[in-house]
Length: 303
Ligand code: SF4
Image 1 (tube, rainbow, N blue to C red):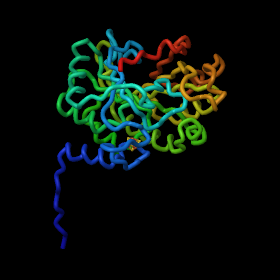
Image 2: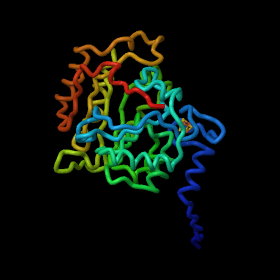
Image 3: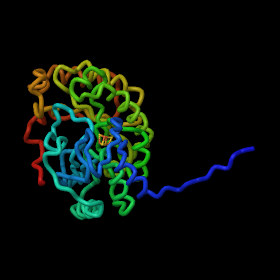
Image 4: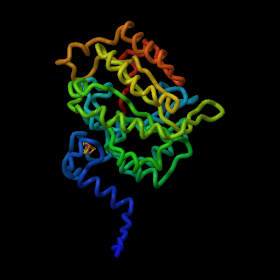
């Protein structure tokens, strides 16, 4: 005889509370009680360092006035070369409530933002989902992540996300371990990208993105072979996503022990990766002007 299954409906708020006291939002799965402690991402409460119109995202995200970026503090990946170092290390920022986050969504819409661009959202995916369940902006929501994600977490926020904007940073476990301490980066990030690429690509009549995935790859010094390995991984997905090749690497962060990171990429490294992308025939490709490799492109933080 079949046993009757008792269905228990958890409210969203109960789930969010559960994440707070036993955090497993990202692949690190620290299991810490974030009401009392911090895990690898270094933050407990919802904390931001800036929100503003940002004109330098890929054109389909920026529109005419800019993407409505919200820079969150903390990070579960902790790259040594982080270009937003004071944020990822939780050295800047101010705590806000979920209700204040909703007010920021409204403010960015009123400023004319083309999108709501959630920068480094992973460690707050539960709270962001809560805010978006209270108010869903009329412009696309962009989940702008380092790519080190659990599918389970992505599924909880997916009902509120229109555009996925993951990095795919490293293919080699050795390289990922060297710069982040997380050798399993590609294992998680590759699955996350494959999952995100299922969202259909769509643009409006003005070329602004409505739904889909843009994968970013920041080319690092002395790592062009790893960059090509990433492009080879992405090639079978090339019709389903946009690829954004970033040449803006600027020596920054805690790189004292990594001499190779103390210079921008060379013309030769850039060309090798760009040629590989062209040879693989990526139909939707964004490239950066190499003049972008400047600390002047790192925003001034407000908090
Ligand atoms: S989000 Fe932070 S606390 Fe939660 S599992 Fe990841 S690193 Fe740990």
